[in-house]
Amino acid sequence: MPGARILTLSNNHELSSLRARVLELCGYEVATPFGQAAAFMALMNGHFDLLILCHTMQESFVNEVIQMLREANPKAGIIGVTETKWDMPRFNVDVTAAGSDGPDVLLKAVEDCLKNKLEAA
Image (cartoon, rainbow, N blue to C red):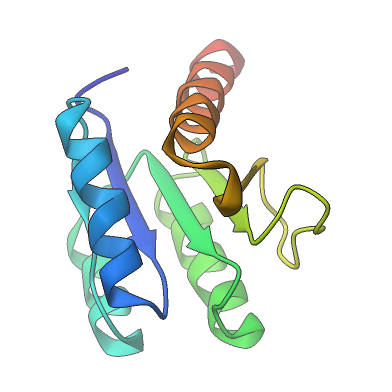
């Protein structure tokens, strides 16, 4: 599903930028706002097919972001990135991916999540 618009949020700007670069190389359009205000602005001003949330994000902020995304685009997918494959996601997400397993696992999660959302539509 290259061409899909993805919003990726993390407290680690370098890691978020690296994730975005990998996704962009695969043909996705990626926004990586840094900070809560920038994330809210991105959600208010853009349409996203997928949201990627890092395990380091503050729970109250993430819950608000998820609610905003669901209101703006109920068909959007949400991926929770956990630190390891043994961690449980702290958020209500559609798919999880262990950050420690590398970019291939994240790319598969992105493809699976987008595919599942398209099939459900």
